[in-house]
Length: 125
Image (tube, rainbow, N blue to C red; front, side, top):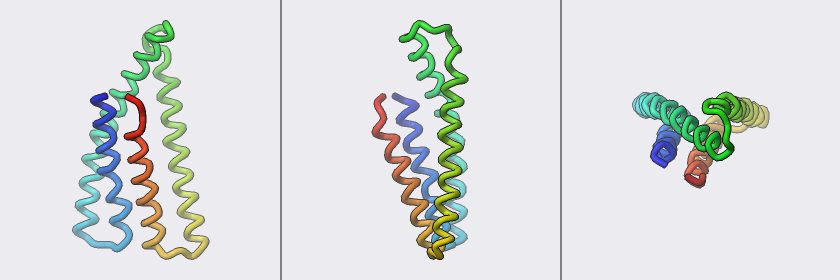
């Protein structure tokens, strides 16, 4: 549960960057960029630890050879990760096609970011 509780706040740390593009302000942009960098660094370390722990539990519970499932779990994670990247770009393209104001577009992206981050806290330990 330690890594899981560590990942959630780091996800929230990267959210201000989306909002920083709504009304561009140099100080807020640099602060949110620094927060994103620090949050992302810890996020990826926690992600690796959490993925390893989940794999070990799954392998133990299903009597699998140690290390046999990690590639499949990592691949599934990156499939979801890249799909969200594609869907986010598609959403932004659709917002721009609809002539939505840039401020509103980044507000929508920021809210999506917060919802995704908050949903992480609902996962079972």
